[in-house]
Image (cartoon, rainbow, N blue to C red; front, side, top):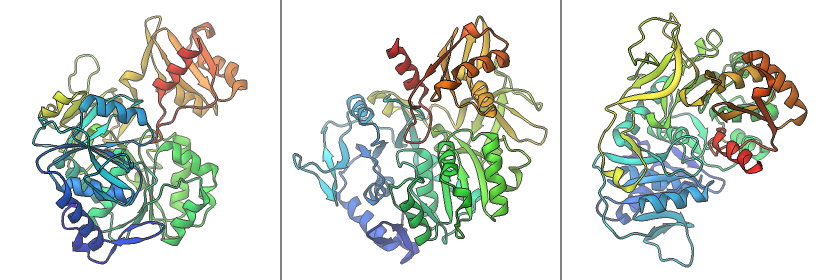
Length: 466
């Protein structure tokens, strides 16, 4: 698989930066040099995952080693501090500080020893990633090399990734979706533009044009931004593939992109996944999207999906019956970690993941997610799905986010003048009195580095305003 023998693609372009182009042979030589300088034994290493070639070099090198490493977001310094405090790693890969002496370095980044104590690390444990939506929590997903390699092979199979493809790092490298793009493209000998630019910057599109971008991978928030910058009016003849994951794309927007893709000979893949499954769980192929616009499709190659009754956990055999979505496959995590002691644990899930998503299956075997088990609250004993309410409001062109606790439904919007209309609309939609609905104006929604709404932060802000 991809971390080993990168030189098999010889002089083909691997990584592209503003200042240099690295071939696969050059990348392999750099990784070999890093490997020789890594500490002996099995250590725990935190990688501050800045979007640059240094991060990709250390990532590939660590995958080739026996070490356990955590890809930590650079967007949340407190989260990294929490990780170091809770897990007491042996080393950290970071931007160099002249105050410290580093084991070795590449460019402005180096490996710093911070804890000499030996650690008890499971032999199958390789990579740890933060759980989705984390706002500073040190709860991590424990992944094996088997899970990473299986998911890589499965994704590149259904996306038909080829060595001629060119993609770009517009997703963070601490995020399972962002890492899966690195994995799949390097495994197939494709080229990756390494840039911290965003889709709303003109320079981003100049890079894409210069190097003939063929695939673009985005989360729902990115697709909203793309529409605002006039993406569907741009001339990008080299673009062949669009992928979407990281949350549900509103059906109306998904349809717009699907129609545009069809008219422009671009293949759009709607994908569903969780960090707990390394990256991907299911996908909806381009030729199925317009007919099943709100579906997450079917399981990835080598994986299986089924539904379990929400009350008794029994297998649901029929169609159009809601239950918890359960996935099984070799890409399922070993389990969670919340402290150093958890790193010694083995496989606790045995390739079966209860996703926590509520879904149903149609008569053709396609799955549709209707909400989250944890995105439910009760109002006077009746259960309501916050995702359903948000989806309804978007369909009414009312910009709003739903949060709250039992008997405390809170709807926030960045448009103050809409609050009364939102309250009236939701009252009619749920058939509950307006007095049971609270609304609040906020200047901004908290969006994570991976483009996901951070509901906990929104709720915390509202508590602070009381």
